[in-house]
Length: 96
Image (cartoon, rainbow, N blue to C red; front, side, top):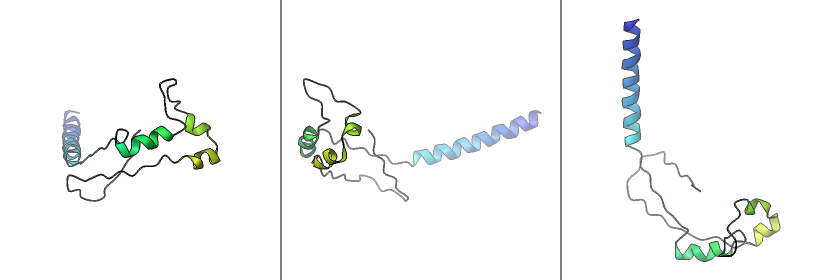
């Protein structure tokens, strides 16, 4: 019984060391675009934008029909400079 617990303990230590090493090599970089000048005006043009009179409705975009969505010109271009070298594969995610 004690031998099998020791084997399990050593296995967990090895797995923990591998996971720790893998997480140490992760490069994460973020960019907030809501305060960029080129995006502020685009965000304000959205029919779902909050105002001083009413807060933003989180389900607003779902409630718009397709023609309303197509009419909205709320796009902006954002450039991100990668600060560290990254070995592939590189994953990109969008955080709300």
